[in-house]
Amino acid sequence: MPPDNHRYLLLDVFSGRPFAGNPLAVFPEAEGMAESRMQAIANELNLSETVFVGTPTAKNRFPIRIFTPSTELPFAGHPTVGTAHLLVALGMAERGQPLTLQARVGDLEVRFEDDLAYFTTAQPVEIGVSSLDRTTAAALLGLAPSQVIATPVVASCGLPFHLIELDSRETLAQAQPSSPRWLQHVSPSHVEQIYLYVNDGEALNARMFSTELGGLHEDPATGSAASALAGFLATHREGPGHWQWQIEQGIEMGRASLILAEVRRDDAGAMTIRIGGQAVLIGEGHVYSLS
Image (cartoon, rainbow, N blue to C red):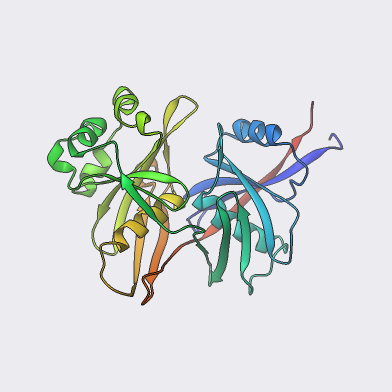
């Protein structure tokens, strides 16, 4: 084995069992690694995201960088939840105290409740106009306009998504984005992620599609989209309160995932958004420095 190598661990996130949820690779000791190498490794591993953890800046406080196979992200949900679980499992962080992951979007505070890690978003939800309307969203997804039951919006807690509400789980399973219509209706917005959802009250079903390496990619569990959706749904609730949702995602991919979302709004109108989930460690490996 070459003496210069980087250890990584594999987890399945937003699931309590192996081979479900969203796969994640985490390099727990990536201090000093060049950005170009991080991107090359993420491309090589070809997972939704790969996380690189730097040297702690204080007790229970770690800088992280998150890469897809093609780009760095300011924020992502399953890397946050998975990295938190891993740092505690490795003894690098203490479970009983708040854990802070320093992402590009800002500080993400994580707390543990039983077998769940919950992070609080670093930014409040922002809601804007989507480049899609009901007609173009339906055409994009191969659906009838009546199956899209609300005007799409863009929502973000650090990473923006077009939120598209559909009329049933059957419609959700049927939806399939068209690449030409994506280029026509989604790409001009520069928001290259859509989150489809069906709202049955506190139970939600969702699918997420994005562009990756020139093609369309479906993600089995997307905490950043879940936080944007929860924040958006809470804007339709009146007064102070505490609301919770369970979001099932990845069903159509055979990667069943469960994302827990909650929003609190105080008397002054300030909103706190938290996303929680399980994670299971499934393996580890090494990437050699072969330059």
